[in-house]
Image 1 (cartoon, rainbow, N blue to C red):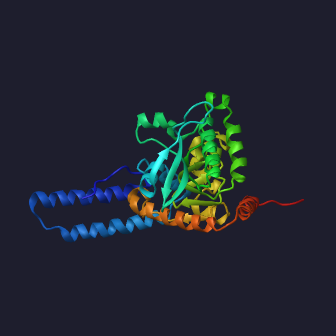
Image 2: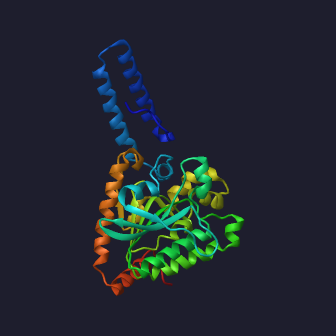
Image 3: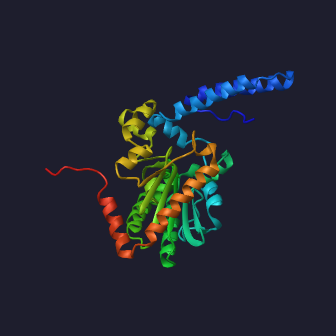
Length: 321
């Protein structure tokens, strides 16, 4: 029987039902009672409660799901969707940033270039990965790999999952804003197809630095925002307790991104989030990636660049006075 796992605040009704189910199961084993009818009733209620909770999530609850500690990270998807991933290291300027990884791989019989932000599962790995927040050398490494992909005519696939670029003193001294800005310019002019997958957090310029792509796909419970909710709350209300209010105001959910023309496609997740069924989440990503790459490969370089230009020109609204 599946054991209760890490529980978010809004998931507590599910945890309580799961614990009741486990207790009933343990009692039936110990005392040899037939409690199948009672267990079926609790399982039915558990399923109904799941559907009720996850079909009506607030923006802040979606942010919490995007940060779930069991949620699949980039390497989880790379290992299941691609074959022969060969990581390439260093920006040829300063160092090798482990928060932003990349390299070549095979996807459905064709070579591709992967660029991905990677978080850690435990304290040791999080320190090594800098909690998934890249330094400027990470973005310069990403640019080097994109240019390598262009040289060998490889599609670029970006896995986006970061709260933000790292804003420490060393990062600022090495010009993180310039590194991100340069990536925006160079990705806009890249002469090979590019697809971005937002699989968790998509925060600020840290996400945008590898997200100027031909097709942007967002998982159902991921988010993409100009700033994380806590940062927005700290600036507007000078109080991080307003994070939930900020999340609602930012319109950062997948459906809202699609409605605004920022995201091209929303990828459905298993009920309760991608961590509930990683294989199913992988299959959804694989199908969407295959379909979008096939469509992009039919375009000439001129069509690719023109469509990308128009895509970003048409995002947002303005009024001429």
